[in-house]
Image (cartoon, rainbow, N blue to C red; front, top):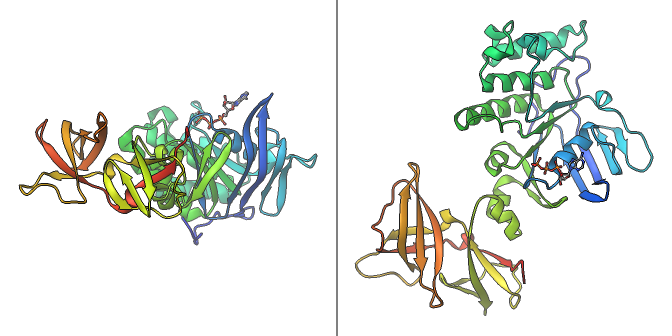
Length: 372
Ligand code: ATP
């Protein structure tokens, strides 16, 4: 969603503004939940706050919306300061002109779909009403304009809620887990539709999620939060392929952890010897993280394993349809280690047989040991 295009919010009051949250901190009583965080979202950009439950994502969103009073830092939209934690102005939510959509986006049951969408609009606001009609139509919901929300599917309701948030042509859009109430099949389509609408509008969007795949799909940039701080930010592929800490690597799912050490530029682990990744201080206690999908398994060839391959014994293999989940035993000479692997498609070796594993060098994730 990089460049705003011609479909930007229309109407005299429309403006695409950036959201800047600068050095924001927040505490509930003496519980510090946001610690000196800065977030910049430019017009046409979708930024995801990704992190585990309780790390402060929703609090940041509520601060941007004006639903929590800013204690420390500063929030601007375009050229306007909307909140200043040093005794400056704090605009109430209705004066910030932000679109808000939360997880439990309840529509008003006694209003029709169209009335729900234009609820926040002035009666005279013809341009935005027209926009609402047109966009309902583009979304294939024109026939439901006069229906009541209960006849809509969950996905259709989600789209109506999104239109309600966008109808007043907000300067900035704030989304809190907008897809979490939807079932898996609907979610992919609605994510796609939402992505398209936001791309067309060119609005600055800040979205909160704890679902890494959702963040990867939607975001131009991901800000990873841990315990009230942003611990890594970057494009989705960077965050996935170049996590800076074990915490960030594990956000994307369970990983295999192995002992390792670096000596003379070589990484030695139970998976063998590989050239050491750059930028890791040798000598410090290290651990090697391998994602289950990074273990590339193959049946043991008649001639035995090649030097760069590791021999593993199959403990279990279960087909999940699109992929196969395996547990494997690695004989490391010290009691052995259990590894999890995920192979694409069907790969069902006999239990107890031996297979080989290769790991591409870029999939060797080495970090300083957390509990060291
Ligand atoms: P989740 O994904 O579960 O919504 P989150 O990352 O969005 O989590 P927040 O909702 O921002 O996290 O909450 C951060 C911390 O602040 C949590 O420990 C939460 O219990 C606490 N908290 C949030 N709102 C309040 C409040 N109004 N009063 C007191 N504590 C609060």
